[in-house]
Image 1: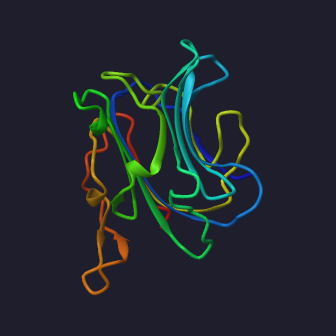
Image 2: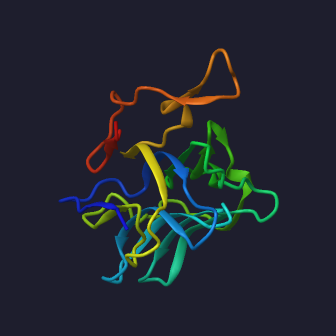
Length: 204
């Protein structure tokens, strides 16, 4: 039932941001595991959530309650998308958003262990140009718990970053090992510009 939370004092950039986290799951059974949730679901505003299902499928949602619609609704494809359920493996996830982009495919990019896996998602809803997301608001940010205060994450988290105001590639957070080029490893991120509501939690 452990989780972390903070409510920023002001709003930042809701159209351009990057979320980066290293995680390792401790369960392949049970319900949904929430990695991150932001917004004010109880207040009727909506939310952004990143969830890992018990089958290892990844879901990224941004829901606008006022309009009763999704700005973003992606889930890794059943049967062909990557399944993130190896309890011995660390995974690195980057969700990079810039809804101001004129080209739709550039508005959301998702990287897993340094590789762009955006095409591995069923993209039920992809944002329109200049959509505002439920992130970088003066509303609660929860790490390891969903907006309805359940679905606690069962696993390990490290190097958790939110970048407010920039859409960054995975190479801003990691690199392939010189001696073992299939191994993706973290790099120093302390010099990145985190913006108004961005943060860096290294969990050292």
